[in-house]
Image (cartoon, rainbow, N blue to C red; front, side, top):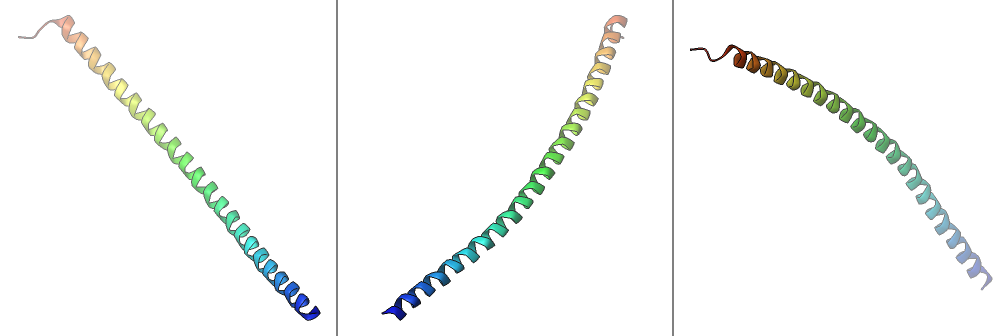
Length: 83
């Protein structure tokens, strides 16, 4: 009977060690996933900033074109219709 308790205790220890090894492996993978997540987040933020900058430049270009068309329209109105 004493031998059986010892065997059971060793089996439990082996089982707990196996669980511990799995937890350590999972922790390692979580660390890797956190690094990947941080890289993705940084890249998305950078791309968003680039797109925002491009959008602002495009808006400025369109605004300048609108100003120019408005000036041309005012000049036409001042000069009167050309026949």
